Structures are given as C-alpha cells and as structure tokens.
Length: 345
Image (cartoon, rainbow, N blue to C red; front, side, top):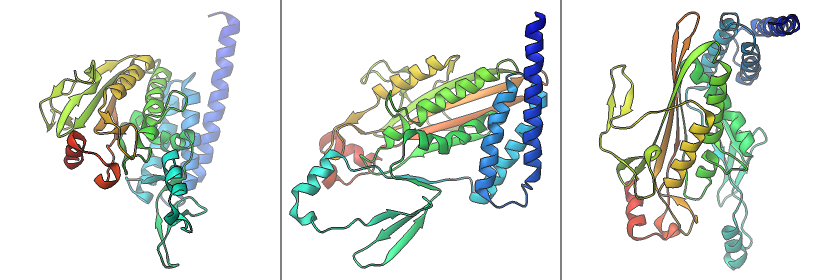
C-alpha cells in the first residue's frame, strides 16, 4: 500500500473508532432494562445501526461487535415493551371509480366521514350514526403515507435477520385497498419487497470482507388450495406445482416440502426473481380492482453468515407475504372461477 493510501486508511479508521466510542457512550446512558420509552429506544437503535454500517466499512468485525450486541438487546427490549407483533394501518385515497360513484349518487349527498386519524397517528376514531366515537389503537397509521414512509417503519426489522432473527411481514385487507402496491410498488415507487431485497443484498456486500455469506430465495404462490413455485415459473400457465406440504427439516425449521431455495449472489439476480414472480401471479379484473390479486404469495429470503475470524455462524430469514384480498361478492361482482377462488381463501 502506498504511504498516502495507508495514511488515508488509518485516518478513516480513527474517525470510525471515534464515532463508535461516541455512540457507545450515548447508549450507555440509556438503562435498557429500566427504560419504557419505546420511541426513545427505537430512535437510538436506528442511529446505532447506521453507525454499525459506517464502522464496518473500515474496522474489524470484532471492534463493532459490542455495538451490534447493544442493537440486539435494544431490539429485544422493544419486543418486550410492545410485543413481537406490530400492526400498521394504511388508508389509501379514493380512486377514480369511488369518486365517480359518490358524485353520481344523490343518496351519498349529506353523508359524513366516519373515520379519522388521531394526531399521534396511532389511533382510528370511528363514528357511527350517533355522535359516539370509538378509538382503536395501532402501532402506526398512514393516510395514505408514501412508500418511503412505509419503508422507514419496517426497515429496522429487515436488518434484524443479520443478527439471526426470523422476521415476517404480511399485507392483509379488502380487495382493492393497495396491499400489492404497498408490497411490490412500481418501478418509480418500489414497495417493501423490492426495497427489502436491495437492503439485504446491500448489507451482504457491506459485510463481505468480514463474513462469508450465502443468500437463497423462494417465492411461492398459493392459489385455489394449490402451491406453485413462482421463482421457477416461465409463464402464467407454466408454473411448477409444489406437491408437498409444510414439514420440519433436520434443523427444526418449518419448510414447504418440494419448494426450491434458489441461491443469489447479486441484487440484480434477486430483483429479477421478484419481478418475474410478480408477473406470473394469478390476477383478474373485478368491480373493485382492475388487477385484483387472486392468490397469496410468499417470498422467503434466507441468509447464512460466517465470521471469517471467529467462524461463528448466524442464520436469519425474512418472509414477505402479499395476501389475496378479502371481498364481498356482491361488491366485487365476480363469477365462475373467480367466485370459486373467493371461497378457497
């Protein structure tokens, strides 16, 4: 290494050690076991995770490990305080069909909104025909919020798979409410699946000097009671059936017997599989949605990390599920095969 380059490297390491020590000092001031302010813990956790990413660019994994251990403890504390399950609500804006319906029906005139979001974005105020209000609380409510805001809420959970956690996210709701948009998005406004894929592969790249890694992905469709392997699908009609059901493997993990885990080495490979799977999924037009998802899809990304120095292995997994919409047949106006699908969900 040339003297100038070596000097620059030593300077970069010194900056990161200073940043690391400063963050550890801030974290030490928070007594995790006594603190009950979830927002304060989460804010400090997000900052700590950024410092971890920054420091791993130049410092050995051993030096950064204490901060990563603190992040794991903070995550566990958050789970203790608010539970392992978090529920977010996303209220989309009215679409053109709904605007046209309201403006064309005289019976709609004089009606009032029956749902309002509280100022802290954690409560839904429901009003019935009487002035009485009922408030239902959730972890976060977006009305409708942006794709970036939605991602900011769940991004810390994606990073937890690098600490050996299993994470699952799913979208659930009525047909036409924007579940698939939230999960897949568009090329201009990508959703959670696309952003999670980029985050996993980006973190893997960041850690490649410190850890050996293996990433695999499976993408499964459940349609009309039958599992299909979307990652291997070549067309809407040519989707390999998965004949087996859920079972426990040798390590005690629940897997889908017959499902193929495909190794991926680059972000482009993973995104190509996501895009291909979305295009092969079963959809159909209904009165509620011009491109309604008629099946459930599950994308599972697994990662195995092995520290090059300590040889310690970490196994993590994230499953992202986009569930088919729940609907009233009299509203969706489906018949034939689409009507049969409603009964199989």
